[in-house]
Image (cartoon, rainbow over the protein chains, first blue to last red):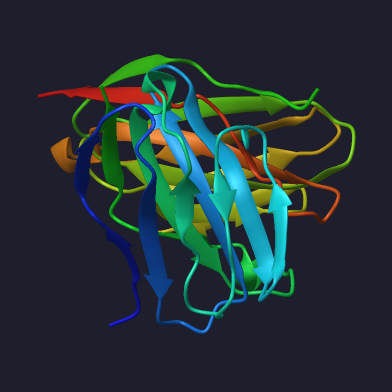
Length: 116
Length: 110
């Protein structure tokens, strides 16, 4: 089954304790992205990657790191989490290059993060 | 900067038709997408418009007018399961910094 898998589904941590949220897709997609969703603010893009070893900042990259060492995996790293990073996080992937058939973003099921 | 505007909430009756509008800044626009998200779920892709006109997929249609920097999602024969949030999303200048609107919460009355 074609899917984007995120882990964990729920995570509670404390300020300053490094954490990683994993994301993996089995569709051989070149493009992957991370979003955070907060009430009233919609989905905001954190980082995205066009291919292996290629990453770019989205609109809200501060406090986050990513890496793309393999095509299928795109982990999100919070080196020193703070309470304002409490949010619902989604990983997404899509085929590239661009084109109408490739516009569909496939989303993971989300990670609810609470930083105390 | 880049921004999208869509209504925060819309209410309609089961079996009726509802339209959710989305306006965007013109500069560098590449295409408009729509996503549906049920409470506790992930967004799922509904449609995409790069050119002016109407795209139809079953009960859902999406429209784009590039000259008016405006698009809408049309839902027909509303069902209770259509109660969800709907997001428009725009990609600018062929890059992948995709911007989402803040979402429209659709309430459906029996």
